[in-house]
Image (cartoon, rainbow, N blue to C red; front, top):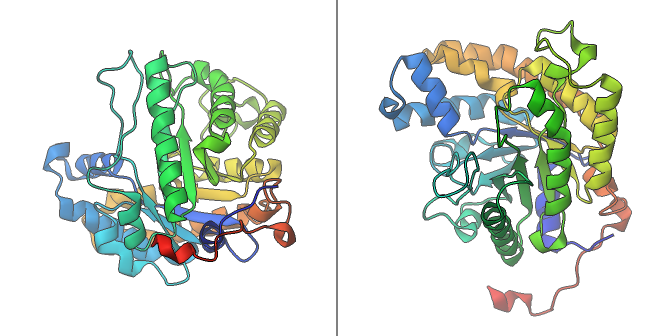
Length: 354
């Protein structure tokens, strides 16, 4: 069991519900939301207006934030217009990474993550962040140069979060070095990629507090779901094998972990949450699975609001219900129960650092 600083402890408590379960909403999408709006508005991506992205994020945040224990947004489109829409009892996560990835100057198909220009952890703290989220693309078999860049980036953010006493939530996203992620071949690779990445970034030097992880398998390629709408017509594993993969992920993670949605449909995401929390996940941080269909109604704000109040709210309610059996973060072996959480001893003159 490890100690935790008082600032990080307070931040993690705010991210979760009273029973220590994370039911968090992501609305930090930038590039993907611009593309979705371009498709709906029949425009080139470059012609989508800043105001449209900000307006849609505001509508989604206003309608759905009350269902969440925390809201993850971005400092570019989201925070400036939506901060007043987040209820006072809902925590604020702010994204640190630039949207997308850099693929130039690295080996073929590899991905580098970078910070948002002129954005720092100190600035996020002054903006009122209760925690920091960093998305890092990672493939354990990438070139040494790419691995060093990604590892150093994560370690830098971990050091800065420690310096400013903010919880650090690391989102790991795998990718294919050959072929596509939308294939049965990648589905077979995915469990090892997710678990190996977790084994790397749970090392103490990264100073991560919570992991935001992809579901470690792909139910689209799971034979037991062949009668579901999301089934892709080919199988990589059985449900029993998927459950074993989830257990192996939980065994590998020395940190509390939550599930991301990766844009899957809500039916598949609910199954992911059930299986992940059964294995030991502490909840979810989900965006598009809950609200993505709202985009198709824009710019008809009345229609957007009707969808958010009806179907999207139902999606969120169902996701929250699926997370009811999640392992409380303080019951993870990192902490050993609420009564055993230890605050790291700090100097009585800590305030001199500020």
